Image (cartoon, rainbow, N blue to C red; front, side):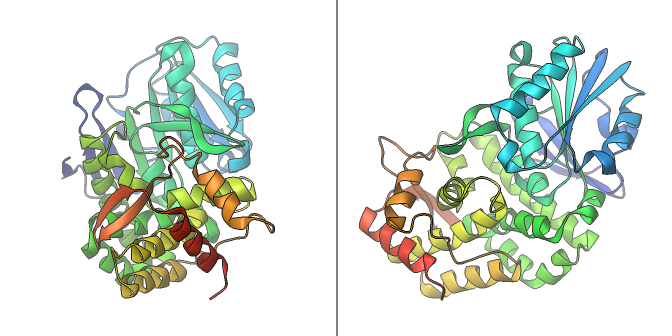
Length: 374
């Protein structure tokens, strides 16, 4: 992983994966800057996939700049929301590709948040067995997490992101200006994925977030630039060592085992992904404490920061009759589970994560404590 300055306002973090390596461009004014797309494979056509919320804001600007590179730039705007991360929406992308006669050199562009990026990547991995694609994330969560690393998927009613593929983009273009139009709730959701990098890899970064959470919430460009860059640096370092999550990469899912259960149990879209992850991190920290890995002060520190970011820390009740059983059943469908045994990303020590199981009785205690307003 290398970080270098490309212009006065643009920095680049490199994902080092041999012939699949690519750059993450971070800066302002990048969306419709021609240089952002130099070096992307040439083709007769491109397809921009976005959603109905982002399209009125940014679609025309991206189409205009791409029109100088491609003879035909097609578009498709999907319904907006996690609830639409489905086969039906995926088929809308395939309908557009086939309807416009797109070939195997067609370049796809994902313009939007994590849902758009995940579905565009999955479509790119599948169409004609693989066409190139570019991530142009417009949410904080997508810029610091989902657009980077090549994990693509759709949801299933029984589990989040259970159907997908590892497929790397050609480039990630993070225009910080797009974060200025994010709803407050979406900004907070993105901060959950920023915060997670501290406990698992860099406590100095966690301290920086604590010191700058006000600036981040106020969308200060300099603060956002550092948060996105450092988050991408950490993720690039992890992905470069473990592209397909055979071991180390799983630590990036801190808070996600509990969080995915919350999303699936409540129904996709009821809580945003980052909200569920924020609460899930508190639950995972409590489980780490119960196993004697960290002390209460660490849990309280993390919980306080997550609350300052505007995120929930009290877990929802998923089943009035058997809440613990519902959580456990959903977590056994998690991708990290092995032979029905739930695997959690836990904090082995501040700044270091581990993946391990825990006794159901202990997990049950954490669930009960986390669902009680305290």
